[in-house]
Amino acid sequence: MVHLEPRPAPHRPAGPVDPDWWRGAAIYQIYPRSFQDSNNDGIGDLAGIIHRLEHVAKLGVDAIWISPFFRSPMLDFGYDVSDYRDVDPMFGSLGDFDALIDRAHGLGLKVLIDLVMSHTSDQHPWFKESRSSRDNARADWYVWADAKPDGSPPNNWLSIFGGSAWEWDGERMQYYLHNFLTQQPDLNFHCAAVQEEMLRISRYWLDRGVDGFRLDTVNFYFHDRQLRDNPPLAPEDRNENTAPAVNPYNFQDHLYDKTQPENIGFLRRLRAVMDDYPGTTSVGEVGESQRGTQVQAEYTAGDDLLHMCYDFDFLSNVYPSGGQVAQVLERYMRIVTEGWACWAYSNHDVVRHTTRWGLGDAAARAYAGLLMSIRGSVCLYQGEELGLGEAYVAYEDLQDPYGKRFWPKFKGRDGCRTPMPWSADAAHGGFTEAHPWLPVAMEHLGHAVSKQERDPGSMLQFYRAMLGFRQAHAALRKGGMTIVAAKDDAISFVRDHDGEEVFCAFNLSDKPQDVALPDGDWTIDRGAPFRVEETAGGLRLPAWQAVFALRRTDET
Ligand code: BGC
Picture 1 (cartoon, rainbow, N blue to C red):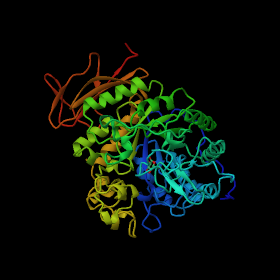
Picture 2 (tube, protein in one colour; picture 1 turned 30 degrees about the vertical axis):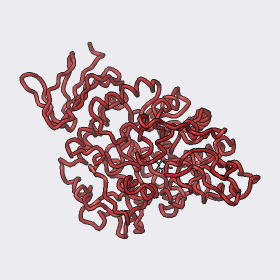
Picture 3 (spheres, rainbow, N blue to C red; picture 1 turned 45 degrees about the vertical axis):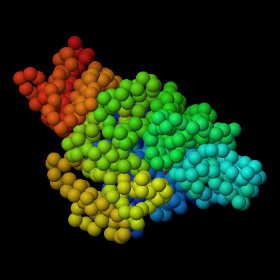
Picture 4 (cartoon, protein in one colour; picture 1 turned 180 degrees about the horizontal axis):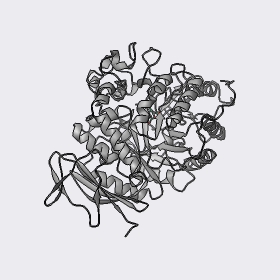
């Protein structure tokens, strides 16, 4: 598609940028379909985001990450792109995007967009051309392979969304690779022209003023050129971090269909482009169940690859006890010696964490406080600040093809994608006046922003206070971390930065627990939205409470 817009003036704020702002940043993820509808078609849009940006800024986060809004047939709700340089009319226009950037920057928010480079939609003109013959100009832009002599697919690779990763194309008389839907053909990054085009697309958005990218499925860009079969995994080695238990994708060790060594070279090229735009950042989504942490270490080593990777450890179904949190953090710090983590509990792909882990209100606060105190940047998913649980979505209302495929054992991703409840009294929670694309959950109305705004004890106010506390302490954002103690129902650690140490201790249980400050001259900081009691014997944390204490190390 030809784009006639003049090269836009960058919508980047003037003045000095802290090139390191992303280290310790809190990033708020917006799923545009479900945030705010502004034109009453039942689907959220960019103008809706602009309208609600103040809510995000008031939370005290540093940046937003917007899930894809590019032109798309929407079979995977935007993760199937048919034009990387345009906004889907359903979401608005390029002009709306520019206005969004301006508004966000005006409110002090950085903007990250979600680049889906690994695959396109099958409706992308590149794929239409590529499939048309074996010798067209884009013949090798996708991963094409002949059938085996018996007509079956070239190897045993599986799609995350179910079935073989190969789809037969009668026009070209070959199979093409797709790691997700059959309508999401995989781009061939071994082809130099594909890499060039992706770098140009990155520049296009950087020129428009974005502050960086969330890189979808960043380890899926390259495949093994020899198309070797993946070996099976022993049942005890299966890890459900990338796909649900019912999915046979977990039965394989994905040695060859992704995470190939050639990716490093491409990431270095991408970083070189980003370095032309100081103050921009990248968060790579590494979908890799067996070697995820090692891959993160490789992708973030030095300062010429990715800035951060998105970690899946706290997106798992396993309730993270204090001991497990400590294990994840210590393992991460041991393996990812040079990189910087980006943690999340919830996103648009997993059951909301309060439901996944069965957290009540107090427990949800303790875990949120913990997330905002550990070393790394954090992504908060829209609605998390309201304490939303997973919505029940009836089979008739289901939209997600992944859920339809594995229903009922895996219900898909619609339950975390239902619209934001803005107002308890308005139709559809104030999200739209039309019929919403997914129903607004009735139980979410009690958590609506309008209600929580008025209640000083609400979850929303808790998130604001905790984010404010984090902002006030550079050690919590940027500091090192040493675990002091961890057990099933408690964890404590020290964060340190630039002469300041912050001791953090969390009671992860519904019973009071005594806690001792480490040796030294500590002062309790009561600025965090938690309570601690001072007893004759020391400190007592009531159920699900935390304590923060400070000391300077440069004054002694
Ligand atoms: C995104 C999903 C998407 C998939 C394919 C991801 O990991 O987060 O929502 O379906 O990539 O693009």
